[in-house]
Image (cartoon, rainbow, N blue to C red; front, side, top):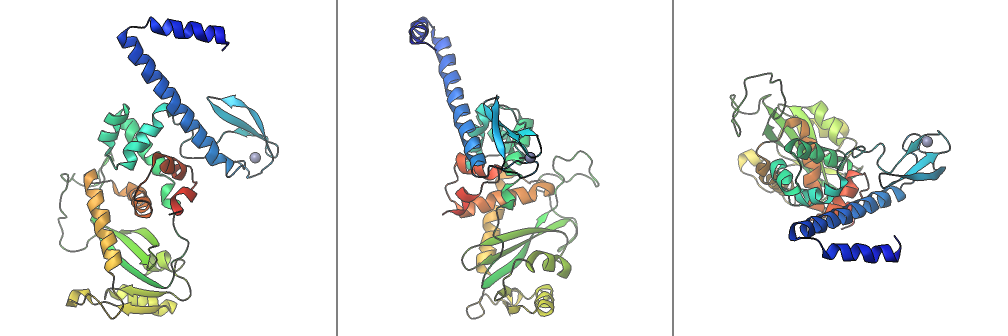
Length: 322
Ligand SMILES: [Zn+2]
C-alpha cells in the first residue's frame, strides 16, 4: 500500500465507532496469529526440505497459496506445501490454531478448548487428535542400562463410538468382572534411569509374553537389566531373550530389592492416570495419543504452543532438547 493510501486508512480508522474498533483489533489479532502460525509451519518444513511424495530434495518454489509457499518437485512433478502429508493438511481456520494449542498446553478438555478458542466441539475434538497424531512417534529408540517395566490397566472405553458392542457403561464406570479381564486395557511402561520412557498399549486383558516381547525386545540395549515385579511374564521374557532380570516382589510387600525397584515407573503410572482423569474417560482408540501428549509434558514441564505445533508436524527437536 502506498503511503498516501495508508494515511487515508488511518484517517478512516478515526471515524470508527466503539464496536467497529473492537472488531478491527480482533481482526488484527487474528492476522498476527495467522502470520505467526504460517511462519512456524514454514520453518518446520525448512528443516526437512524434501518432497512428501517421493522424498526428493530437487524442489523449486511455485507461488504462494493460502499464505503457504507452494513447491514443485522436479522428480515426481507434484506440487505440495509444508502441510502436505502431515495430519494438519487441509485443516482450516489457521488463525485459531495458536489459541487452540495454548488450550492444549494447559491440558484443557475438548469442551473447554472449544469454548476458549471459539470453535465447535466437534472441530475441537478433530483438531485435538490431528495435533496429537504424530506426537506419539516422538520416543526414544532404545532404553539403556537399568530399566524398570510395569503394566497398568485402564477400563476399556468406547467413548464417542457410535456402535457399542455391549451395553453402555456410565461415565467413570466400573468393570463388571473382578481382577484383570478383557474389559481392561493394558498399558506397559518402561523407563530407564536417565528418565527415557516408552509406553505401549498392548491390548485387552493381562500382558502376555508375545506382547511383552514385541514391545521390549527391540527397545532394550545389549547391557540392559530389566527390573519388574514378580509377574512370571517378565521372567519368561528375560529367560528366553537372555536379558538380565531383577525382581521386586511387590505382592509380598517388598518395595526395594537392593538397588532395584519399580518406583519410577509406578510414579509415572500414577502421574499419567491423575492427569488423564481430567478428561473424564478417553476412548481406548485414542489412548496412544494421550500417552504421547503426557510424555511431552514429562519431557517439558512448560509445553508451549510452538512446541506442540512442531511436534504435530513431526519436528521433535524442540521437545527433545531439555
Ligand atoms: Zn516428489
